[in-house]
Image 1 (cartoon, rainbow, N blue to C red):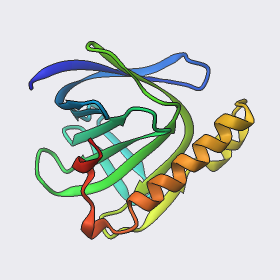
Image 2 (image 1 turned 60 degrees about the horizontal axis):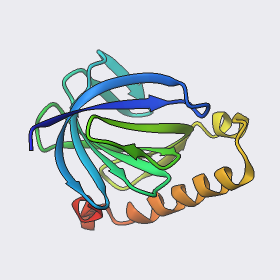
Image 3 (image 1 turned 45 degrees about the vertical axis):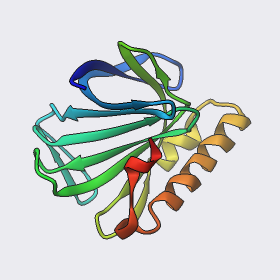
Image 4 (image 1 turned 90 degrees about the vertical axis):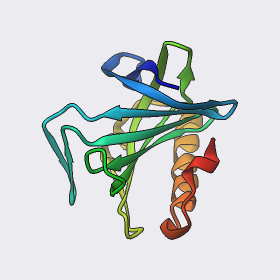
Length: 158
């Protein structure tokens, strides 16, 4: 497709905190798959080093309380990890993708090990009970998606 799009990460209050550009790989009635190059020199999350030049295949699904980033070492097929943001359902237009991050994250290693991140930040958010419940249901859905990494077919999500 080679269509450029801007991704905007917002906090739970709707304030933009970060934005970057990506290339659309696929659009469907279920959402959008974007390819983006990591532009920060180095970020370490547990045992994973995210490095400038790593390629992220980012799944933004309509009506889901999460997005999924498949992180590749550079532009190689080697997957370092999957990083999943729990968030309010994404808003997708032809120019922008925006989502409101709700702090809680799921990191999935290539061997299938899962790690829930930022629990304290999530607990501290001032969100209503419905949003808190939907976020936790989104986490549970993600954990089910990643139960069997060997049979993982994320492209079927779109």
